[in-house]
Image (cartoon, rainbow, N blue to C red; front, side, top):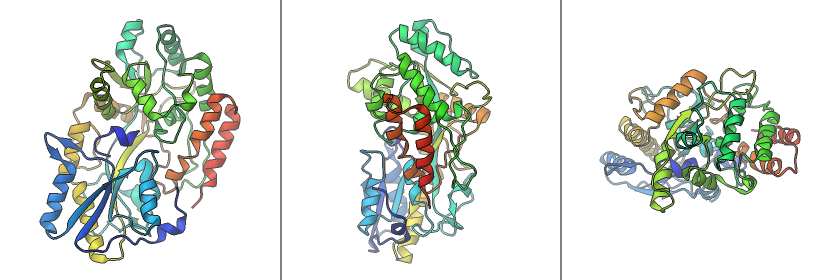
Length: 416
């Protein structure tokens, strides 16, 4: 869902990432992307292409959009398998991490100005700067203030607990609302569920190599099962997908659920355009509630990134690196942060003044970030392991303990 809401942005066997045979035609640069950002008639991609063509006036930039129907990397997978990958690829890190492989991408370390970036270390693999991080944002618990006011429920504090959450859910259910949202029909939007792991103090990996998953999902899956049994989430949650979740959110059916600030107005606008609502509900963002014994609840952070893919032509690779740099320039990030309220990854871009972004910034400052291995090349495949297990837990055909063991095993089966 991240790819459909934020206006910015077949698994391959490892050997396929050891080469690329994209277009070496010096008159064409192929760019694969998810979405454009347009504000006051200014387009991020139009601006980038114009800037690029000032440097390379005889090169035609061909833009192609990613197929996001299942939330996977199916477009680039197919292009790479056919030996015709693009020269530049930009997407959310929740999908493109698998392509941050030193043998597959152009080393950007000596081809772009790296000084403005806040932190490039996670993108360096085997000494190669594989990608440039684009804007991103942290996730928060979106509180439906309108619903709480109607139900007579005080707005929770930033230090609320899972017990507070359950008490709120009970009143919400009695008033015709769901306490929160849930879905498990596909991998897309899994980060919305994963925020709960931090609520229960669960660490995903033993260390920053991400070679060993140690996460125990038992309390998380037990929590999901409890919400289901109590009727605090939709009874058909196992069959719902992230788009169903987002639609129900925009209709105000949940009193508190995981969301990103940049999604709010996008989904409200869509629902209003369809005649489903007249206006959106009032929203504020809080951290996820904390379980007993947990003092801080780090939040999920996802950003976009851009890579230049090796073509076998040194000149073409330099052009691809330059396009990547221009696409993620100071001006480009300023455009995106102004439009979406997302957070910059550059030192030379001022922070967003968006109210919701400020709330997320405080959540991050107070609680830190959840580490789910999002920059590891195995992340893309690993995130596909959870939803079929979660479906069974929600349907009651697998116990939380069985689901937790199966999930950890599945994560550890994905190796380099």
